[in-house]
Amino acid sequence: MSGDEKCDIGSRIASICFSRRLHKTMAESSLLTSESKDDNSMENNKKPANENYILIDVGANLTNKKFGRDLDAVIQRAKDAGVQKIMVTGTSVHSSKEALRLTRIFPGSLYSTAGLHPHDAKSCDETTLVALEELASNPECVAIGECGLDFNRNFSPPDVQIEVFEKQVELACRLKMPLFVHERDAHEALLAVLDKYKARLPSVVIHCFTGTREEAVKYLELGFYIGLTGYLWKDKSQDGVRKILEDGVIPLNRLLVETDAPFMYPNTRASKLPDNIKESLTEKSLNYLHRYCTFQRNEPCSLSVTVEMIAACMNHTPDQVGLAATYNALKIFGLSN
Image (cartoon, rainbow, N blue to C red; front, side, top):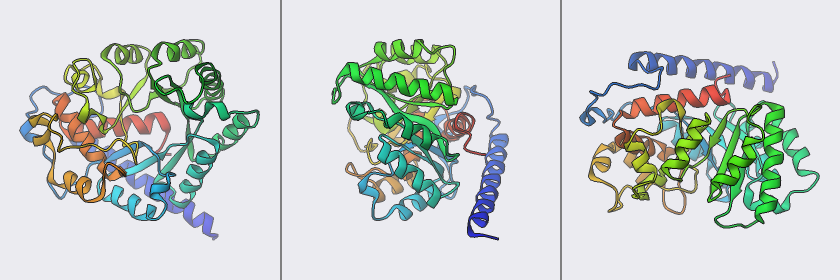
């Protein structure tokens, strides 16, 4: 038997074990739907220190040079913290190739996306879409993106961003692959592009959502999924992510969780973070966060902190949030296959 065959068999066994464990835990928690009982007290939100969540980080920039020296340790820490699978985000042809390469080194644990970030839209030429399509043809690549519109910084001209984004939407529709979408200060323009393809759109994930209640409601009405990060620690507006969660705007069956590592560090020591959220955080999750993560380099092992903060805002248990988000990720991206 060749080395590749052994690797493939090992990956299949690991996938089967993961799926069995997930469904067993879901059955025990009675959580295969988005609904939850209202009588769950926040006192029960704490998880015993010796137990792990079952989480999937749907967005981590592991091709970033900050992970160049110790990626093995980063991935092992994530697993130890309950993050079973990680999607490595592609933001250019080069980083998409690197993301795919990492999936071959860590089969069954890492998956990749292929896309061109709006910041780099101006670099798109006739070879870019061809290269992205070729990358997307690999089974380890599970989405088109990170792509979208960013009118906040406009590192690429808005008209160029729109043109390049539309080409990637067309690619996702043709390949029937999920879209992993970046949007900053471009809500209406983004919807205008997606509306052209509404009859053909695959699953759409709004990555690292930082928008308003109105924007979230519109995305949900269109059937999109909302990806949340540790950003919510600093959002204390009356129309932002934290308030949206408290008001139950985002249902569990549309929620995904991500770290956007090495970015979006969840600062649990911030004075603006409400006491009820701070009190909901478990010692184990905080240990991973404070020991291994910093503002300069967030890691996937911090994902449990984000899940616990989301749970506190939604008045759910962390298991409810984590398992629902994991189920959604498996369904959208086919990670259990």
